[in-house]
Each structure stands twice: as structure tokens, then as C-alpha cells.
Image: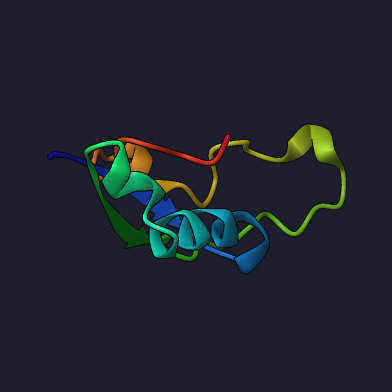
Amino acid sequence: MKTVSNEISIVSYSLPWFVARDEGFFESEGLNVEFIRAKKTQGNGSTDPSTKDPILGHIAFDEGKVSLYRA
């Protein structure tokens, strides 16, 4: 089996991954998916979307600890 890692966070993004795991979809494709909990980060307090860092909060992906990201 090939092992891949995926960053998980809030349920609206992570639930499909958990369902796929529980239903055996990954295993049937020869995948072992490891889940890495996302680290929480502080935002800049702005409500202006143009000032938001799109990778903010995805430290595990940025550091290479996970191979998949919910983008």
C-alpha cells in the first residue's frame, strides 16, 4: 500500500476524507492515508480578503509534513 498524509482541520473540509476512510475507499485503491491535525495560527485581524495569506494555517503542508492539502 502507498502511504500518503493529509492535513485535517474543521469538519466541513475533513468529513469527506473520514467518510472515504471509513467506507474503505482508500484501502480499495491501495492507499493508506494518515491524517495530520492542522496547527492553529493567528490571523492579522483584518476582514479585508486581499490582506489574507491563503496558506495561513497550513503549516504542516508548508513544512512538508503532509502530501495533500484541501485546496
